[in-house]
Length: 393
Image (cartoon, rainbow, N blue to C red; front, side, top):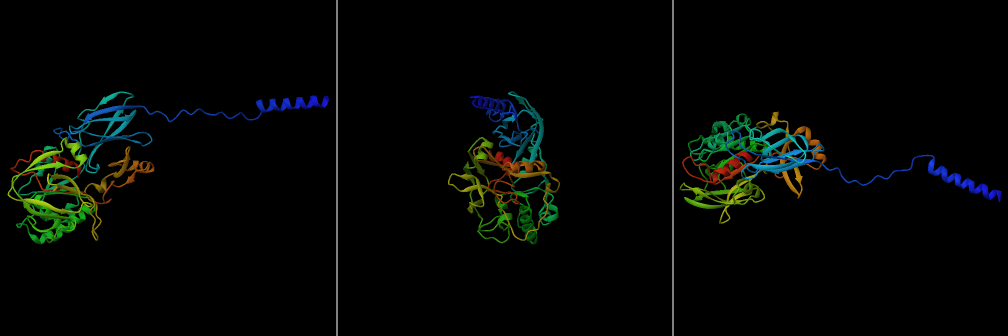
């Protein structure tokens, strides 16, 4: 009986020791879910550098402390509302992929409040070096200047000098600048230099007859394989078959139509003849504007590649601390933006990729339009489209 009593006491002691002695028992934490990030709103209007024009389709974004992006775009009137994490933030405003036109401003985001940014803060600055070649039927430099941006006049002699053109980021080729009066012995050098320029990230715009810079020929082209040029003949054919008159047109690119605020407009082709795009490679070119018969009127590409072209720094690239990356937004929407180089490793760790979301990682843009800013003509809403071209190169 005594042994049985001692055994019971030993068991009780053991239980008490396990309950009160040794290591503290584990505490199961409650599942409180992810931390709630406090946010506020920033509103404003993106405007051109001189404050004269609202800019639609601009990217407006910032990052939180863990490098998550908060992103929106400006509407056709330049207005935007950006939800952003609370605190002192750097707000980025860009067009295109941000390599040529961008601004960075500091803003304090307040919890559950809206802060209105002034137009002094939301101006879109020019970081690109822009050049243009004077033409007979085009003056796109006028549009550049009305936006408050600057461009330098160069000649076909300059296009034949790679050292000269490589200092620029963008070159505008006004309709009629390539013609029979130019020393045609320059054309092989011009063609080779433009190929090198675009292959290394430079962008160009050509209108109407200046498709000859792309595919060859002078003044205008009348067949699908003219001599010269630098874009392969299999990628584009344009013939001088257009006639004078009003052509109804449709904006087929969603980003462009959102930036412009319209999807249809009329183009006044006030010359007796103009270039029709008769054939193009849809995997190479993106169509931005068509006529009602489904013929392309405005195309662009950043898929240009070439073999044997020299590797050379273009424009502000040698001094830029910004890098183009591709970020995927909710809804599997991809956007190309330029960010400070110091952010790149953190963004890549979150799934971003270095380089644009589409096209060649090194190629600049080529824009071609069959319409233009005629020196004496009235192109109506086409002028607004050319503003978009300028800012998105």
